[in-house]
Image (tube, rainbow, N blue to C red; front, side, top):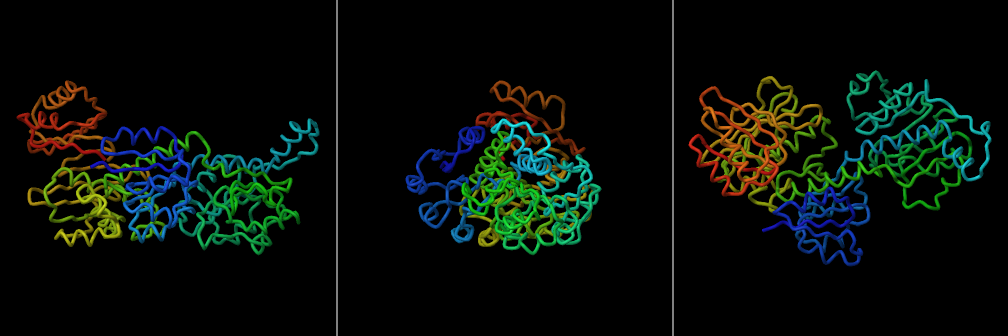
Length: 527
């Protein structure tokens, strides 16, 4: 039975095409439907994609009794009732990195404007047709101190670009290791007060939480240099807006660059009355590239959730991902995908799921077990299993769960998923390269290296000449294009190939491959 995915708000076609091509999905396109007509369409939807235009409140949820996952196509989830979603067993995901570069570059635009009053100089000439160069003296970024509050995906990239302008970088983020800052030849601030007292420019890049809401108020402004220049392209309300107005009036703040407001739209906001304010209407994600990325990632997440493979960037998990070190997060999705792949390679009833961990990731092996269980059973049980009930469901079915930390075998961090059935054992290992690049590096002892994404054949055979040509010939005869081919050998007379293909593999083609004399087994998997 096809899973139903509803798109409630407008996203670009590049994402929608992913869902239209999926044979196991029924797509409901409701972005152009008036909001008062949307609710009846929710009754059979299992996955919903929304943006800021749709409030996911109690009324929305009451009309979506079958909803199992919600993807907020963007970063902020202010319009999503997370608590009610959790009570209803709905996993909420966002798309946190798709607009990173767009937000970084908008911050740089406001930073440059704060130094050179560009927007005023532009309006003075273009709108008033007045040529008065002496009116628009600015300052240079070179040699000035930029204080960053928050050194995550966006803050760190702003720092790199500002450093290229010759700025001195002072960063404060109690949740990142000092080495992340100092390795870039930047200075770590020991406290927020150090940022406030030493910075010529200050930009903030934190999520909006009870801890950060209004983190810069009148008391903090008093500690800043006279003539400080402030930027906020993160979340509205991080700077207390009444304090900003006072600072602009007194001259404490020489310039404010702001893209986000506490309440939006902010067309009559008092900050708009000040000449020394550059203001934009929440444009952080408004580039064609970021909107394409958001659409593609949101639809890929929806597809993954519908198939029970994984729930990337889930916000209401049984563990708080924001409390995990940054290196751990990519393993959450990787371990789900490895378990899903393992379960597809042997579809007999699962007797046991075991996690084996090497390196620092070993400290999180038990947490990874939950995600492995969802990956292993999601394709079988569908929406009846999620991160909240995974271990309970597994134990109810008599599936033994365990985890183990092993000595390092060559990778700084490695996770292995061991799925045991009555028929066989499947062991799949993976790691993360370059911070977030997922790789499967071994299957049942065969060394390999491929990304766990796309359509693939897993083919084990006797290691004799001519096998590759036989596989490619059968695929070519059926007009199936090979995108990539990875081969591993065990030195004992067998080989294992992972063949990535562009088109779905029909059962008849699998049967033809399985009938090859050299074939030990062949499986088709979509991740």
